[in-house]
Length: 255
Length: 245
Ligand SMILES: Nc1ncnc2c1ncn2[C@@H]1O[C@H](COP(=O)(O)OP(=O)(O)OP(=O)(O)O)[C@@H](O)[C@H]1O
Ligand SMILES: [Mg+2]
Image (cartoon, rainbow over all chains, first blue to last red; front, side):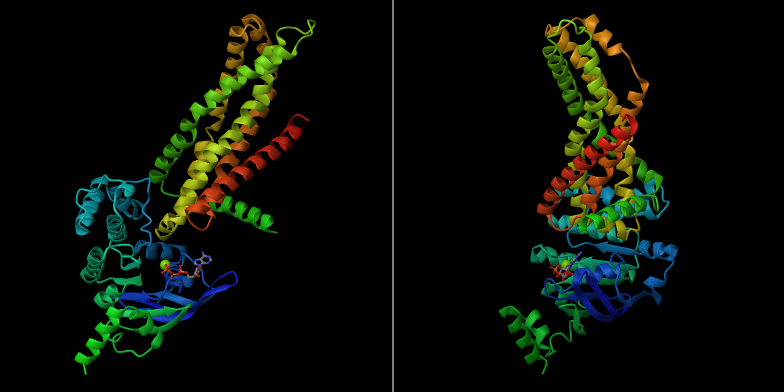
């Protein structure tokens, strides 16, 4: 469980996060949604400890990030998997080396143990046989799956994904979403996903936090997001005609 | 103000580079890769330029000696001096600022904009140590490249001199051996090591702290080249006036 309290973050004069409080539960897929530029990536990077913040607190399993000793931070990092917005694969390494990298950094496993584990997770994300390809030879969807494999290879307790399905076709996007959902359920981890993809919201949003201009505008779940009359949310979520119709039908069915 | 701030960040970067070292099993491979990328891959261009510039220096010197009272061996002597003192350490370093420097800036800069540096940090790796330290170690072999430049420069002078009909083999060799001052070599290698440090760190600084996208990576490489050269030229002046002046 991750608890965020009154988080503020600025870059110079630009106040990006303006006091965000929320929590992300274990075994759930938590979604952070909001328009481009609303501060989703900055928020996620604060959670990861990549950015320092001026005010507020972030705690993992009851322990505040700022109170952790370097060793505790190291242990926490070993428990975190992150899928970056652009995959962020190391382009000088093969796919297998990319996936193996956290194992080399965090564990003392032998080469063959690591190779077995890498093959196992690559199989999990349906990338058998891609071991020796370079990231530049893989398609965007494959790169995303490699990034997911790298994030889960060391059995993390916390999984963060920054727009895991942006730039993918709708079908591949759903495959990726389902994969993340399955992994979350299977290993009972705390998953936080940045997204502005409405399919994801409807499919996997067990908890949804809506950010607008660095504020938390609304929070709920995929079930309550249909019913809310918060205008900012409905304008964002039901920006397309199709979704407006879906919502209308849903509300008619459920009254 | 901005310059002062950058200089401060640069020195903090150097300090942070030595913090929290990366596992040796991983670091070893990074160093070998950087030796290959930065040193081995530069030997070709260094050898080519040294040989031909050495030849030109010899030709120019002999063309400018019209006075019969000046001994013929002066060509070898002058070529040796200019190559060892300035051409090999300084001129080659400026070329390396273009070749190696822009390679370092663009590769680290690309890792910055594609969040690969963030990915390293998330895994608890000190990305400065991971990225910059191996380059510094690789470039500690830079004096070998400069030795090759010195040797080939003097050889180029010899070849140009003898085959171009500007002087005899014996005269040139006599000039090369004349009044040999060991301290000149020491001076040249002190410079080389200082330049190696600059070549590893300034381009890394511009890559590491850049922000933006692919376009900015290109701009950062250019800026990095300009500042690396400026610092090399200024330090060359400083070291020369301290050690030889
Ligand atoms: N390192 C930085 N320095 C200064 N400003 C930044 C930095 N990173 C982000 N910002 C600013 O913070 C704001 C929020 O950016 P952020 O990347 O979090 O948006 P986002 O919600 O992730 O958008 P998208 O959906 O497009 O990824 C933007 O206005 C951006 O310009
Ligand atoms: Mg983002």
